[in-house]
Length: 274
Length: 274
Image (cartoon, rainbow over all chains, first blue to last red; front, side):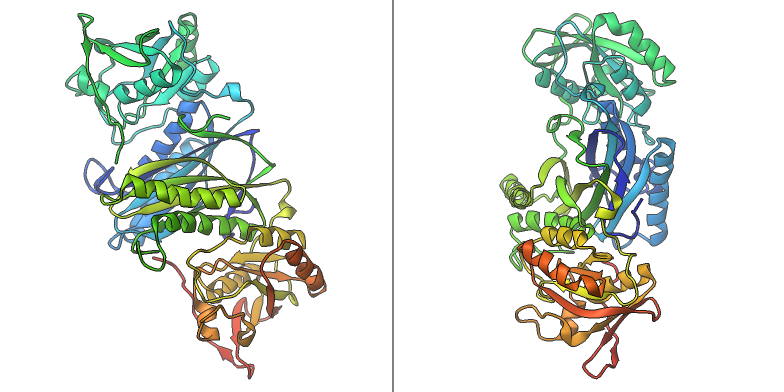
């Protein structure tokens, strides 16, 4: 296939449907170099992980990635290569080909990633709008710890899609925000038991777990009768644990967090990053 | 199709081959707001035009675009919407669907664009590596004037590809640099007659025309016997004029610019933007 060296990359379509997500991370907004493990390699990893996490939430298999680097004056060529190596390592481990890119100058390190996955038919994919009243709400992994080396839940996303998940989202802005997106899009109310949330190591409380972004876990809704099949599918995918944290009701579209007494707690995740 | 509101956009593949280009423009690097006509709408236009120009150079038909906006603290929501309108207007006029995007904070206005085109078979597309000795070198339009409202040569690119162009590139870094890319990739020397270059309005000389970037014209190579067919195809595409500026020789791979006496002039375009 044509690619590096031409004006555009050419790859063979791997399905009738092309699933695309774009994402960017910016120095001093999403990370600070040298803090919280943010080496150049880790920045490359995180930028790609964040974009791949969106494909995971659709149940899509990732195939290609394209990288635009905005390099700041102080960022060396060696650091840029280290960044690309970090992205390449995650690409290799997820079956993703780094198929193209561009480099520009920027005042701070900026990494913009486009990821493409493929599917044959629309029912293979999962959106945010399919929740039915009575569905169970589940999450993968644990919440609140903002892993410094996030791994996108691609296997889990595909397994959940194949097991019949009605809706799915990746928890990038915090469960409180992202679960609300699913509820609003689907016209149902997700009622979540705060104390059922799976706390990450060192996470001081359930409210923190519900409102911390950048977890890269998946929140999903399934029919109660599919519960066993979903647990089996996730185990077979060799992936993260699943925790059932609530259900979908006929209340006002959105989300409620209920404490141990059944009282609603008002929680806000991140609405926008700007 | 799924799209806005889900974690990723889903579009139907429009061909067996997926042609993708990514590009970014950054405030104070590629433009200054308010200078040289750089309104927010124009920035949106230029960002998309620059990416589409890469598809034009492949002979691909554009289909989808994805936009990542990095918004600076002082940039208002109204300005952001104006920027998107500028991109949408060019998208509409080129048959391109704005299928997704993302918004982040950034220290300066940053626009990252991914464009996707489709083709059925590889021979429909043109790279940089197909020049044969004896080929004519042509360019579309005029050079050197850095238009403030560049229009990507999509019609011309497809017409040239269909008329059998052996190689093609868009002139983003200046003819001197971009023609050299074609020569080096193809293993031939492009010998260009400096005084044959079609000067843009107000361009003070041939050397300026050969070294100014951001022209968004196409430079291409064709068999001498296809000259008439290429001119006809470009006329039928309702597009830009074509000017024949040189030919490919068996010299050292690269490019030569010859003045009226046949002496070589040493010219440099932009090598990198960083």
